[in-house]
Amino acid sequence: MDVVWYEREDVKDQLLIFGRGIQGVSPFDVILEPDPAKCHSGSCSFTDRRITVNPTLFSAPDREQYLLTKGLLVHEAGHRRHTTPLYLPPITWEIANILEDERIENRMHEEFIGVQWLIMKLARRFYKDSRHLDPTSESPDEVVAYFLQLRWALRIGQPVKGALSPLNQQLWEEIKPLVFDAWHAANTESVNQLAEEITEILGLTRLETGDQSSPERNVSNTPPSGETITSERK
Ligand SMILES: [Zn+2]
Image (cartoon, rainbow, N blue to C red):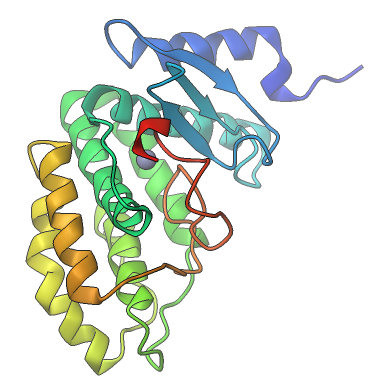
Protein backbone atom coordinates (compact mmCIF):
# COMPACT_ATOMS: atom_id res chain seq x y z
CA MET A 1 0.00 0.00 0.00
CA ASP A 2 1.28 3.47 -0.85
CA VAL A 3 2.18 5.74 2.02
CA VAL A 4 2.02 9.51 1.49
CA TRP A 5 5.48 11.05 1.32
CA TYR A 6 5.38 12.83 4.69
CA GLU A 7 4.46 9.61 6.48
CA ARG A 8 7.43 7.65 5.19
CA GLU A 9 9.71 6.99 8.13
CA ASP A 10 12.92 7.84 6.27
CA VAL A 11 11.51 11.15 5.00
CA LYS A 12 10.08 12.05 8.42
CA ASP A 13 13.46 11.38 10.00
CA GLN A 14 15.22 13.56 7.43
CA LEU A 15 12.86 16.46 8.10
CA LEU A 16 12.96 16.11 11.87
CA ILE A 17 16.77 15.98 11.92
CA PHE A 18 16.95 18.96 9.57
CA GLY A 19 14.32 20.90 11.53
CA ARG A 20 16.09 20.37 14.83
CA GLY A 21 19.61 20.86 13.48
CA ILE A 22 18.86 24.27 12.00
CA GLN A 23 17.55 25.54 15.36
CA GLY A 24 20.94 25.29 17.08
CA VAL A 25 21.33 24.48 20.76
CA SER A 26 18.42 23.10 22.75
CA PRO A 27 16.09 22.63 19.77
CA PHE A 28 12.32 22.41 20.09
CA ASP A 29 10.48 19.28 18.99
CA VAL A 30 9.51 19.20 15.32
CA ILE A 31 6.05 17.99 14.32
CA LEU A 32 4.64 17.45 10.83
CA GLU A 33 0.90 18.11 10.98
CA PRO A 34 -1.02 17.68 7.70
CA ASP A 35 -4.39 18.55 9.26
CA PRO A 36 -5.07 22.24 8.49
CA ALA A 37 -7.52 22.41 11.39
CA LYS A 38 -4.62 21.68 13.74
CA CYS A 39 -1.90 23.57 11.88
CA HIS A 40 -2.78 25.92 9.07
CA SER A 41 0.78 26.36 7.93
CA GLY A 42 3.35 26.56 10.70
CA SER A 43 3.91 27.59 14.28
CA CYS A 44 6.67 27.96 16.81
CA SER A 45 5.40 27.57 20.35
CA PHE A 46 7.79 28.76 23.01
CA THR A 47 5.42 27.44 25.68
CA ASP A 48 5.29 23.88 24.37
CA ARG A 49 8.81 24.07 22.93
CA ARG A 50 7.47 22.78 19.66
CA ILE A 51 7.73 23.68 15.99
CA THR A 52 4.87 22.44 13.85
CA VAL A 53 4.60 22.67 10.07
CA ASN A 54 1.96 21.50 7.63
CA PRO A 55 3.61 19.51 4.82
CA THR A 56 0.51 19.89 2.64
CA LEU A 57 0.26 23.69 2.86
CA PHE A 58 1.06 24.09 -0.81
CA SER A 59 -0.52 22.14 -3.63
CA ALA A 60 2.49 20.76 -5.45
CA PRO A 61 4.14 17.51 -6.47
CA ASP A 62 5.65 15.49 -3.59
CA ARG A 63 9.24 16.58 -4.11
CA GLU A 64 8.23 20.24 -4.22
CA GLN A 65 6.08 19.87 -1.10
CA TYR A 66 9.04 18.29 0.65
CA LEU A 67 11.34 21.19 -0.22
CA LEU A 68 8.75 23.81 0.71
CA THR A 69 8.30 22.01 4.04
CA LYS A 70 12.04 22.36 4.60
CA GLY A 71 11.59 26.07 3.83
CA LEU A 72 8.86 26.29 6.47
CA LEU A 73 11.17 24.57 8.96
CA VAL A 74 13.87 27.15 8.23
CA HIS A 75 11.32 29.91 8.83
CA GLU A 76 10.10 28.50 12.15
CA ALA A 77 13.66 27.78 13.25
CA GLY A 78 14.31 31.46 12.53
CA HIS A 79 11.65 32.34 15.11
CA ARG A 80 13.17 29.86 17.55
CA ARG A 81 16.58 31.47 17.13
CA HIS A 82 15.70 35.15 16.83
CA THR A 83 12.19 35.96 18.11
CA THR A 84 11.53 37.03 21.67
CA PRO A 85 7.93 36.15 22.56
CA LEU A 86 6.20 39.20 24.01
CA TYR A 87 2.60 40.16 24.54
CA LEU A 88 1.03 42.60 22.09
CA PRO A 89 -2.56 43.59 21.35
CA PRO A 90 -3.85 41.31 18.52
CA ILE A 91 -3.80 43.88 15.70
CA THR A 92 -0.31 45.09 16.61
CA TRP A 93 0.78 41.47 16.85
CA GLU A 94 -0.42 40.87 13.27
CA ILE A 95 1.70 43.71 11.97
CA ALA A 96 4.66 42.81 14.16
CA ASN A 97 4.57 39.21 12.98
CA ILE A 98 4.54 40.19 9.30
CA LEU A 99 7.59 42.39 9.91
CA GLU A 100 9.29 39.87 12.16
CA ASP A 101 8.90 37.19 9.49
CA GLU A 102 11.11 39.12 7.11
CA ARG A 103 13.61 40.02 9.83
CA ILE A 104 14.12 36.42 10.96
CA GLU A 105 14.33 35.16 7.37
CA ASN A 106 16.97 37.80 6.67
CA ARG A 107 18.90 36.58 9.69
CA MET A 108 18.70 32.95 8.57
CA HIS A 109 19.66 34.02 5.04
CA GLU A 110 22.77 35.75 6.38
CA GLU A 111 23.77 33.02 8.80
CA PHE A 112 23.27 29.89 6.70
CA ILE A 113 24.28 29.94 3.06
CA GLY A 114 22.95 26.40 2.68
CA VAL A 115 19.33 27.43 3.37
CA GLN A 116 19.21 30.52 1.16
CA TRP A 117 17.68 28.64 -1.75
CA LEU A 118 14.92 27.25 0.51
CA ILE A 119 14.07 30.78 1.70
CA MET A 120 13.98 31.87 -1.95
CA LYS A 121 11.79 28.95 -2.88
CA LEU A 122 9.33 29.83 -0.11
CA ALA A 123 9.28 33.49 -1.19
CA ARG A 124 8.66 32.52 -4.80
CA ARG A 125 5.73 30.35 -3.80
CA PHE A 126 4.13 32.87 -1.40
CA TYR A 127 4.55 35.56 -4.08
CA LYS A 128 2.93 33.33 -6.70
CA ASP A 129 -0.05 32.67 -4.40
CA SER A 130 -0.54 36.30 -3.38
CA ARG A 131 -3.30 38.37 -4.94
CA HIS A 132 -3.15 41.58 -6.98
CA LEU A 133 -3.52 44.72 -4.90
CA ASP A 134 -6.64 46.77 -5.55
CA PRO A 135 -5.93 50.38 -6.65
CA THR A 136 -9.62 51.28 -6.17
CA SER A 137 -9.61 50.34 -2.48
CA GLU A 138 -8.96 52.98 0.18
CA SER A 139 -8.71 50.39 2.93
CA PRO A 140 -5.45 50.60 4.89
CA ASP A 141 -5.41 46.80 4.81
CA GLU A 142 -4.16 47.19 1.24
CA VAL A 143 -1.06 48.94 2.56
CA VAL A 144 -0.42 45.99 4.84
CA ALA A 145 -1.00 43.59 1.95
CA TYR A 146 1.48 45.72 -0.02
CA PHE A 147 4.40 45.42 2.36
CA LEU A 148 3.53 41.80 3.02
CA GLN A 149 3.89 41.04 -0.68
CA LEU A 150 6.81 43.43 -1.09
CA ARG A 151 9.04 41.29 1.09
CA TRP A 152 8.62 38.31 -1.23
CA ALA A 153 8.76 40.47 -4.37
CA LEU A 154 12.04 42.11 -3.37
CA ARG A 155 13.61 38.81 -2.44
CA ILE A 156 12.92 37.30 -5.87
CA GLY A 157 13.34 40.53 -7.88
CA GLN A 158 9.74 40.88 -9.03
CA PRO A 159 7.31 43.84 -8.92
CA VAL A 160 4.42 43.89 -6.47
CA LYS A 161 1.27 42.72 -8.26
CA GLY A 162 -1.41 45.39 -8.69
CA ALA A 163 -1.18 48.88 -7.20
CA LEU A 164 -2.23 51.07 -4.28
CA SER A 165 -4.74 53.90 -4.48
CA PRO A 166 -3.17 57.42 -4.38
CA LEU A 167 -4.21 57.78 -0.73
CA ASN A 168 -2.75 54.40 0.20
CA GLN A 169 0.40 55.23 -1.75
CA GLN A 170 0.83 58.26 0.52
CA LEU A 171 0.31 56.12 3.60
CA TRP A 172 2.88 53.66 2.29
CA GLU A 173 5.44 56.44 1.77
CA GLU A 174 4.85 57.47 5.37
CA ILE A 175 5.44 54.03 6.88
CA LYS A 176 8.04 52.81 4.39
CA PRO A 177 11.08 53.78 6.52
CA LEU A 178 9.54 52.07 9.53
CA VAL A 179 8.95 48.85 7.56
CA PHE A 180 12.52 48.78 6.25
CA ASP A 181 13.87 49.52 9.74
CA ALA A 182 11.86 46.60 11.13
CA TRP A 183 13.15 44.21 8.48
CA HIS A 184 16.69 44.91 9.61
CA ALA A 185 16.07 45.59 13.30
CA ALA A 186 18.36 44.12 15.94
CA ASN A 187 15.62 42.41 17.93
CA THR A 188 11.91 41.67 18.35
CA GLU A 189 11.38 44.54 20.78
CA SER A 190 12.37 47.06 18.11
CA VAL A 191 10.06 45.38 15.59
CA ASN A 192 7.19 45.56 18.05
CA GLN A 193 7.71 49.28 18.64
CA LEU A 194 7.76 49.94 14.91
CA ALA A 195 4.64 47.78 14.50
CA GLU A 196 2.86 49.94 17.09
CA GLU A 197 3.75 53.09 15.16
CA ILE A 198 2.63 51.57 11.85
CA THR A 199 -0.65 50.35 13.36
CA GLU A 200 -1.33 53.87 14.62
CA ILE A 201 -0.42 55.63 11.38
CA LEU A 202 -2.62 53.27 9.36
CA GLY A 203 -5.42 53.51 11.94
CA LEU A 204 -5.82 49.74 11.97
CA THR A 205 -8.25 48.09 14.31
CA ARG A 206 -8.56 44.78 12.50
CA LEU A 207 -7.03 43.24 9.45
CA GLU A 208 -8.33 41.66 6.23
CA THR A 209 -5.48 41.43 3.76
CA GLY A 210 -7.01 38.56 1.81
CA ASP A 211 -3.61 36.95 1.61
CA GLN A 212 -1.66 34.36 3.45
CA SER A 213 0.20 36.76 5.66
CA SER A 214 2.94 34.50 6.88
CA PRO A 215 3.83 30.92 7.46
CA GLU A 216 2.12 31.22 10.83
CA ARG A 217 -1.40 31.91 9.81
CA ASN A 218 -3.88 33.19 7.35
CA VAL A 219 -5.03 36.64 8.41
CA SER A 220 -8.19 36.54 6.38
CA ASN A 221 -9.41 33.19 7.67
CA THR A 222 -8.12 32.87 11.16
CA PRO A 223 -9.17 34.77 14.27
CA PRO A 224 -6.32 36.50 16.11
CA SER A 225 -5.57 33.58 18.36
CA GLY A 226 -4.39 30.03 18.00
CA GLU A 227 -1.93 29.77 15.14
CA THR A 228 0.68 32.15 16.31
CA ILE A 229 4.36 31.85 16.73
CA THR A 230 3.95 31.65 20.45
CA SER A 231 1.16 31.30 22.93
CA GLU A 232 2.79 33.78 25.29
CA ARG A 233 1.99 36.54 22.87
CA LYS A 234 -1.73 36.11 23.38
ZN1 LIG B 1 6.73 33.51 10.98
